[in-house]
Length: 277
Image (cartoon, rainbow, N blue to C red; front, side, top):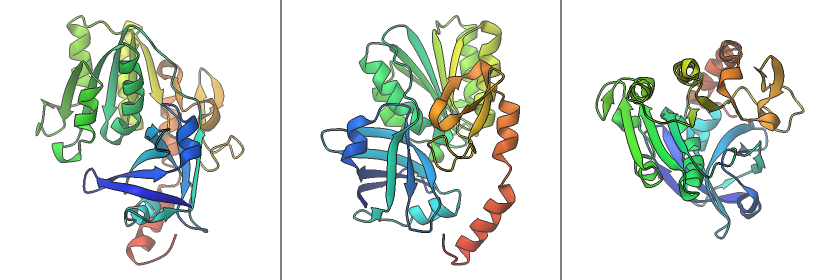
């Protein structure tokens, strides 16, 4: 069992847990994830490691209440325990120690962006970040991103904070202004990452994305998380989740992500009606 030692509500639907998991904390690296299960018959869900402290033996995870399991997780409090907390899984983000890196985080994607930006910033990389959400009330980790960015840009769809519009518009403006970009790292909804990829493609800017397809076991056995990268089948859980954005078949990934939309709708209905997970 893994105790929740701290809970923080980032938005009405986004929660942060600091979990006592010393073995995971000892080996974790930016870009990796864990598989979490909250009860014996429950669903296994992948969550990015948003931060970790090897000395304290804790791992930070952030999740949105979008499905039945995450809604049930949202009811947990400090002192409660998670049944399973498996990791670290996946490949770590590539190490970078110089140059200019632009991070683009959309919505919940700011959570996995943060530990990578933190590592690069501490290694001496010039970091600029663009984070966005539909409205300022849904923007997460703004203060944390400010501490690991030489410059932080904010975009909201409704203009309630920063640029009114999309993060891709801010990125395009920076390109048009001649901003040096050795690497762009984009994490967020699949359609947002695809849009960033199409912005950088004409300029040949190296772009990395963290792909989060449907995942079950997280160890490469089930094959549910397969994605096409460079014309080849890859498993996001063991080959990724970070890939060269210009080689990812986003159209296929978006289609696969919608395969169980009806089942998810029914599960959410069951949760609202008091059904179990």
